Image 1 (tube, rainbow, N blue to C red):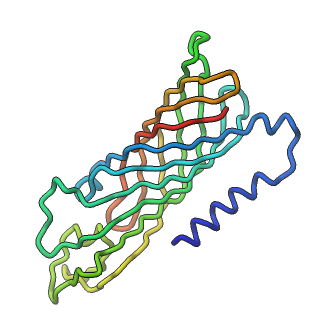
Image 2: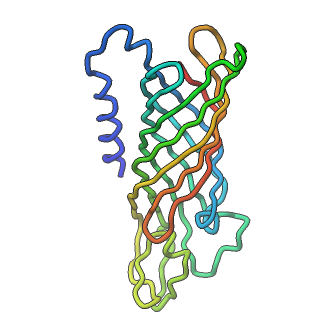
Image 3: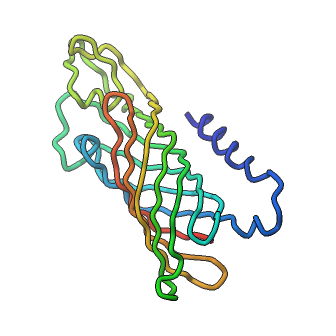
Length: 218
């Protein structure tokens, strides 16, 4: 799992080694931030609130249009407010994404330091499940939906696979809006963003809305 992510990030980084003119470098942008992720159904039936981390870099085509590549991590922990089913797994699930996105922005509203933008895109979504090593599936255990969520295989309604960890890759899409506050004339901005993510992961899709706070340049 980690090798795939490192290779993908390396390829994204290598793209910036392509020679560009000096004025092109002034059009580069990047962002970094973190916040809170809220799962939506069907994910919300199994996961609760968690943190997220986002980092991205891209190119401003002009003052309104930009293309951005982003990496995002979001936790999908068991929801402590939902009664844990008997004989159900305990452990951790994390979502990793690599996406390409288009952003339309208004950098200054009526000449102020405030701005707005809309962003949308899609890419690779990787959901990695790790089951508590002390959890053992008993013979003939029924395959409730929560086992699908953790990545267990089922045949004829019975769990047929015992796992310690399992990854699941899928395509996904996202879209949202953000609000910016320019910090100086150098291009630095503080931003707040809310974005909807949907990925077609096997058995149960990944659906969540991360709210991210961070800093952008350009």
